Image 1 (cartoon, rainbow, N blue to C red):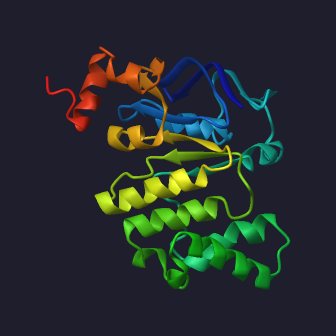
Image 2: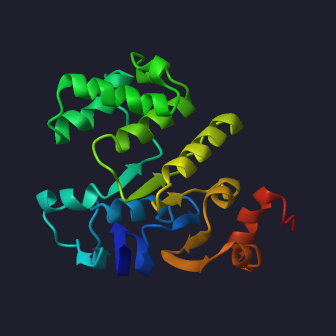
Length: 245
């Protein structure tokens, strides 16, 4: 479904991705690991056309999106549910209005239908009672759950993209988010999760990619990752208490 063909990208003079090539099928559960600033979030933004590569091609279901105009990218973006680390809820809107926003923007649902849909989505994550709350009244875990529901309110995505979904959360809240990610991935829908938390990556993914210096230096399954001798990967694995050296 997703194919990067020798993709390079820079922020100003800083090269972030260098001739990156990989493909991910829509039913895969993939974790992208790497240090801060190594381009993990950039990959997600490139997938949905929020950024454009300096060179190379990005194909979605065989269609090259690299040069597509903004209005042409809509049909690409509705294939994905994307949730960034900051959650991106509108601070001035209630929980209900945040989740309702894409329904009003992209559907012709009546207000009654929107209200019913919003309540259904919030009920699914145990937050219907928080429907009138403002984002500042939510815990970190609640905020993240609302953001996930809003990201899929108007469409039925083929694949989910998560940017550090458990970052900054306590263990209980992180557990809730992990269970939600697994629940939503049913019916053959996969996801890409960008994270620096190896424990959560192991819980959620069966394919692992590791970014270093703008390139993928590892792409494999769990046993291969555990057996890697790449120093940076060994440092990440210390979180699992499997490598104390």
